[in-house]
Image 1 (cartoon, each protein chain N blue to C red):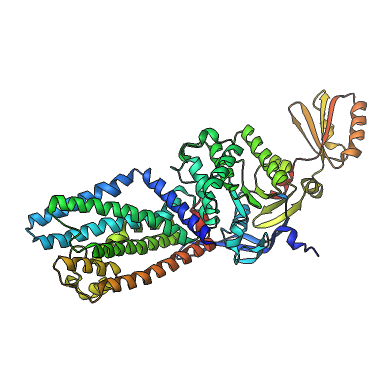
Image 2: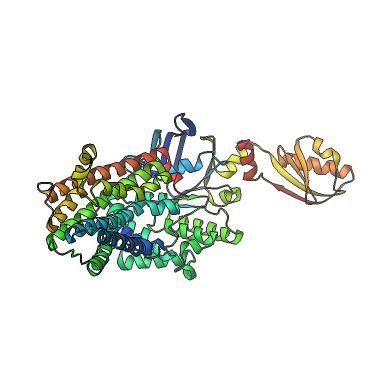
Length: 264
Length: 317
């Protein structure tokens, strides 16, 4: 495929997902309601527990990361979910489109939505709890957001693979998987508090390193050497694995006929 | 030298497909059991058969949506498994049970698929306009897909299937559930596509009249095998269902007709006595003579070949 065709295919998915998102009644809940409820309830809890500003920031970083990763990965999962729900899978996969176009186009929309949520929650955190997301600096913030989006990509593409492998039955993964990843990555706590076998799993999750690097700027000593570089390396590895898994799942669906079963 | 296979739009040989499901006990459902079919470029070819015969499975393999278990399939010169990517740009498909993203509007659906096939900017806008006009979707351009009637949804599917101006078009039950007047327009449009654009069209249908009207050739599939293939006229001759002589008689009931030499069966319908005979040319004079001798007045006579539907019933039996 030429570069122009590659870009057009990505643009097609991007425009489609953006249009669908703008007409989705759940969009309001995904973008505003749940994230705001999350930050307010966790923020108030930090006050009740009389946490220091640094400890409160530690917890709020996790809360914001949860919303950003969740929304972005859902958008990536929509690359397949939208067609599963509308039973139009076969039209998409009969067209000259690769899974890279599907996931990249969806991811770009997810990043826009994730950035919007981050900005909103940052403002809310600053106004309600004095939480300053810029304290670590722009570079650290950019690395943190990049880490969130890369993790969202990996989880979202993994969910796409599972849905393509198991059909509608795997839909629950779209909502459940990211929560599991965040619990393991130390959403409200350092991974050192996890029991060793679980901590080992946590060390295999890229988001663990991005959370660690960002929180280090709030007075918590980093648990890892070169956390951003490690997080990026792990993200690249998992992104490649997730892409391969999705590709293999589509190939299998073409062999088993699941692609047709999920259409019309 | 012109190669014969180069003139074929579809060259399928011994195609086998079995669906496997269930766990832990696997169920195997053979869908295609060695289908071989060659379709020349520029033809309208019909795949006929009862439900579950394997028509859609075969069409899906040709459209690269399904991978065959065995055999070889070349479409427009490409292997459907190894060269699927190159092939997808050159074909398209519309279904009688279409489904697209429900909240996208008609114009947005066509633009989405247009981009996937490499259109952008003004050419994309022009193509969408052309298709909307061609399929008479103008008043519905900004209507969400979920709010369209069945007929309009099928017109959207047809418009989408033409977005890349395909060389080969698959139509899976294109007039299923449509009002008769819309079906007539769709059929007329299909015929125009071949005439104006030299498009090869493969369609599946349950409507025998549709196949007779549109198809240069048809193939009957049953239980994953092609039972017969040819032009509609050839098939009627080959199946040897006989010719039909319809008589309007006075008195209308003549008991001995069914027993007359050469008469295979007789039935009454709408004031006509419809006799199926082995050979109309030979039997008609004999019957008229016998009726005259018996004092029966023959008020009208019609002779016709059997309907393709009767061939279908015979083959599907």
